Image (cartoon, rainbow, N blue to C red):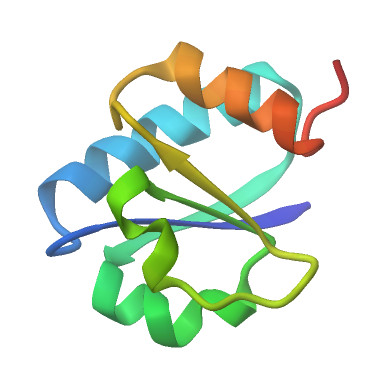
Length: 95
């Protein structure tokens, strides 16, 4: 099981939608997970607790993570295909 964090600027609307989409994609890929949504400010301080972090591309550089944490930056937070592709490219999902 992987621990997933999704974040947006305020931690309300976009991150809630991203949480739903991310959970759907992970379920479809057969990946057991727990998922939490938050603001980018909170994510900065809790990033070390997660295996996977999904944010908008503009927030990737704001996060300092441990070596075994994967950070995925999305151009379009609502695009499930982009998320699936980047999950595969990251090695979280076997092709």
